[in-house]
Length: 307
Image (tube, rainbow, N blue to C red):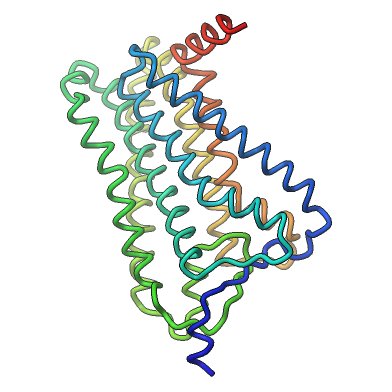
């Protein structure tokens, strides 16, 4: 019997149970949201790529942040839209692992890119004389490479800990897969499935600490100069808004996955689960597009020409 259970390759996602009568409105709202995410992020990406005067470190990092937003949401929205139109909400075991891998890489890469953006602002404001010698094209290329490479490797290691394990249940009470919940399906969870994620959480918590440390120095420097205060409001404030939005959304999801609450309705639970896949990908391009003068001016110029 155990061998038959462990051989099962289909996992049931029960996050949408009880919401069947709202399927069509949810599908329309989700589809429009996904379209908005694509339009907003692609607009910023194309603008930065096509406009040569935007080929600066801050804008290159922003471009990667938007690309990562598209990457992460691609791991959730297509499957979720299909589930909204289906009476059965299932996913293969391999597909479940792949979805969890994509979503976790998205989180890791987002934090890595936000760290690079904080480093860029730190050097620009606190060490302006060495900015151009530090933030060279070669340095930027290396930083971006590791911002993607490290999450890909770390999350791969975490995913391997739950690959091929014997599962005694095929039920996940969520609208998408995450490795933590997949590990809970295992008949005998591996120690590595606890140790590796703990290391990853610590690693990315250090990212947040470094960002926090850099902004303490940035704020101290800006207090002494009106010019730096203007620079802070134009370039650093959007970054802080995007960082706080992302971290708060992630914390909501992590806390609920591990604690949960019977007092929270299914709708609220689902909203908390998808916040980090909806709010940051929409806010990042909008906040930066509206606050960064060069991007805003270029977009206004482009739309005026088209009109």
